[in-house]
Amino acid sequence: MLQELWKSPTALSVREFHEKIARNRSIAVTTVATILDRLYRKGVLSRKLVKEGGPHYLYSSRLTKDAFKHVVVNNVMGALLRGFNDVTVAYLAEKMTDKPEDRRIISKYLNRLKSEGGK
Amino acid sequence: MIQVPGVLVFIAWFLIGPLSVHHEPWLPTLILSTLSFTALGLTIIVRRSYRFQSTALLAALGIMSFESLQSIASWLHIELLDPSLMEGEQVRHFLSFFFTLNVGLAAVGIVAAVGVALSLELRKSHLPLAKLFPEMNFETAPPEVTKSVERLSKTMGVDRPKVTLIDSGDPAAFITRSKRKYVLAVSVGLVESLSTEELDACLAHELSHVKNNDFSVRSFATAARVALFAHPLGHLIEPAVYRAREFLADRTAADLVGRGALISALSKLRESQNYVAAHRSIGTACLFDSVGTNPLFRLFDKHPTLEKRISSLQEQ
Image (cartoon, rainbow over all chains, first blue to last red; front, side):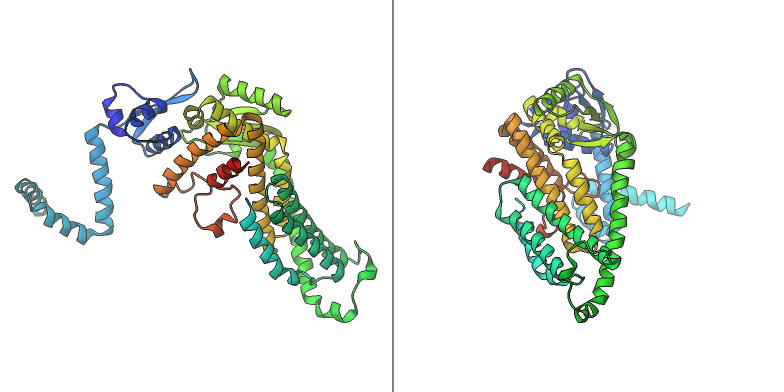
């Protein structure tokens, strides 16, 4: 759903969203309205109430695609590290040493941590 | 549609009934118990008339409340019923503890019921909408919705309620009393996601609550439940009354706008409700009624599930 928002240059109404999404999957307009309302309440979207032509909201994203990715990863990883610290760190260390690029990222962070620890 | 709760109420009464014969005069009590038992039984036999179901349930609540009142009257040596039906000294002595207990519970219940009735009628209905629902923001209703409500009210023969718009994207509508007037509230989410016919069906459902005097029926059921707070059946019958009135409001609305539009609107709302149920989080847990799957908890739900409402309309 957010993909549609990032693609669109203007804010979209529930019906416009529904039109776009319903091309690929069967979904009721009420479900689209509910999802958008929840995203608004979570602070991901902003909206404006328009009364002309029947009351409706115009939704737009408060975050760019990259900022959104950052928020999602931050929330998920933050929760995992809080709840399962050892397991999460071990998993990341194991999985991220597979690729040379990931290893470079890890060693860069480790070096930074070492230098911060030395101060 | 209340057959399952009805059967359970029936069984519960069968088990609890004998315990209720603990105050004097016991024979009239037995007669009253049998009457309320019959009223509850009728709700199971007569399946399709929701008006009859709710009336029989209310009658059962009324008779049970009268039993409580009778205990107090009897304690005060006022005989509400024929004193010749009184039982002997021995029985009275045996039952004295239960009798005293019942008088105490009945007295507390009646005082609480009067309090609730006063609170509902004198305080709550006088409050402005913003104080009744502080978590919601209300906007002026759009002329399209106001005109529909005016037209439907005229057709149904009820006074036009005040119409207001809830500033929320979550599809919802309700009717309530505020400042001694009926107020019909619809959310932006409902207006923007339903067709004109579907929205009219939802508005007609809400107006049916006024046409069918559901506010008085609910107040009576709630006051009786509070009065009978020590009686488990009161807690089961009150939500059953609410549910029967919801089904009845659906029927009344379907007769006016056609059941197709109402079924279509409810089906759309069911889909979004199922979505929320499947993606439940702490934040969304309270968004919708009746999303619980445990049939035992549904006994205490004041709203029937959308599945049941849709299938009831389809069976019509």
